[in-house]
Length: 356
Ligand SMILES: [Ca+2]
Ligand SMILES: [Ca+2]
Ligand SMILES: [Ca+2]
Ligand SMILES: [Ca+2]
Image 1: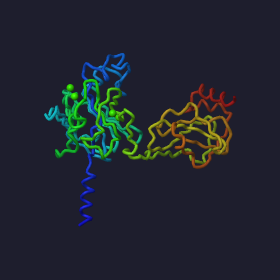
Image 2: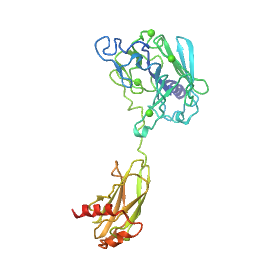
Image 3: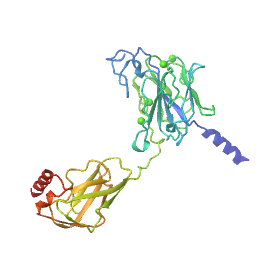
Image 4: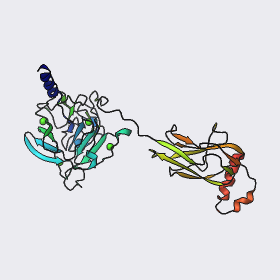
């Protein structure tokens, strides 16, 4: 019996929000963050937002959420805005796949004035999704409904697709009990975590720093312990041709072919005439990762030539021909007249370069 009591206490204690309110803009349409005017706030500083800078209204109606539970599915969830205890708007997330697998530490902003940007790839450091909710919007990710965020006991409640409350209402009147003014943002002054509840004493106001779409700033909000460490996506290159044993003649055009996986960037194609001890980029340089390059075999003699293909910005991701091939320098310039051969001026330029 003792064990069961402990278990139920533990599960009660651990019940935590899957997503929390992190910040909202209470700055009035005709005011600046921290008061004052465009040149200075009321204490002579330049209070500003990390995204908007110092602008009147501080970006208009917006609020910011942080995902706490890893791999959270928020399709069909409802975001209810309140003025005091009165429900104002219900903004519903659509069933779009962008909401289906949110990683812990993701920042979601909902804004009336800022265009939607659902670029999202935590593996490369993009943890932020912004969706625009406004009347006349496309409704692709969230209800096409304008909404208001204010300094007048504004609150947010988050419900899942079944209508069950996940978080809130949170906002002025819950915590802090009062004091969110017309030149301030409401912000969580703590690291986002499962321990944050709507009445957290860490909810406060800020008239100096506002951070639309970014961790909150007062001292600083740390997302490290919340965000999973994501392994970079696998990337590899394989050279398909030439792969060893071939005999080429200088001036011949050979198709270098390769396969790659997980590489969006360009690749560098190089050749070696000394069994891979030293490498020279092909000329003209390869410009894209198309899987092939028409290589003008240089005017050299080599019994141990190789090709190497590398990622242009991750040089460790590289592959060479499996074995060496040979190049015989041909001095028979007459061969240049054959069809399928390179433009003479390009070859002449190359020869000049090799002779230097
Ligand atoms: Ca983004
Ligand atoms: Ca509005
Ligand atoms: Ca207020
Ligand atoms: Ca923020």
